[in-house]
Length: 356
Image 1 (cartoon, helix red, strand yellow):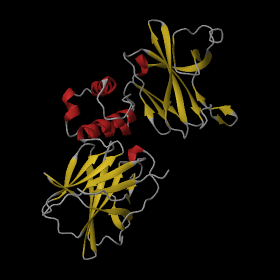
Image 2 (cartoon, helix red, strand yellow; image 1 turned 90 degrees about the horizontal axis):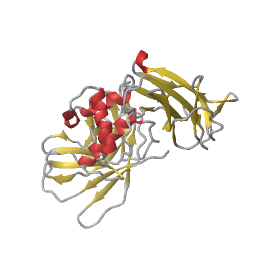
Image 3 (cartoon, one colour; image 1 turned 120 degrees about the horizontal axis):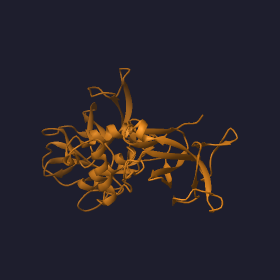
Image 4 (cartoon, one colour; image 1 turned 90 degrees about the vertical axis):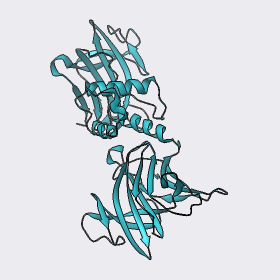
């Protein structure tokens, strides 16, 4: 997948053409995003800040070039909707270059991109004085792109943004939505718009972790979300897809002797999903099947790749919610073997889908 981050330079009179800026995933970010810069006339160059208008937590590295000597410095972590000062005082460098990476937890990295220079970066926090050549084992070359910051009230500004062109508040909310979904909460769609679904997901997240309501406005909230997205286990019930296939799952919930099944929940490869459980049922039932690119049940070793158990409950080929499970075929439904999960006895449960 060829994903590019672009640089758009805009002046008061005209807009220039696009130039590629590299975005790698640190390893792992599948982003289709844009870097927007507004270039306004400014007599002096003060503090430099980077503003993240993307729905991803990013880390940035800076390159400063003066008389063909280039130094690099990083990393600067910038949360969605956050502006961070990366240089203080007057900027004397002839060229400012930027390299940005999303945190590894977001997914597979895009292909290498073109830029203006290959400069050295390192794994941890670093300052590299002669950055054109990597001299240590923990260093590697990365693509940097020259940026021309815009003048603002707080100094010179570089903005990282997606096609959605979020403002600060929208970027922050979209970033929260994205990490909630990755942690297994239903905060879709990821659009930066406040709504009942997002509010419910945030409220449930805070409740599950016994956090006060004002935590969502704290500077450390993204740290909490990132940790949850990396380790969604231990919160009620979670499906985790550890295969290379997409998985379609169905859930049965027992309530006063009646089992209600719901489906289908789509869980992408390498992701986890926490289905919405309004109460804390004593017993759950889980069934899932891997699907191929055509939407058909995947076949592995001549057998359908499914995960379930001995309890036969009814499903449909399309989205469903069913409470009758006597004779599925007679009801025009499909019977599937569900695994029984006694949450009253086992506590929080994580069902992992793996290939035998």
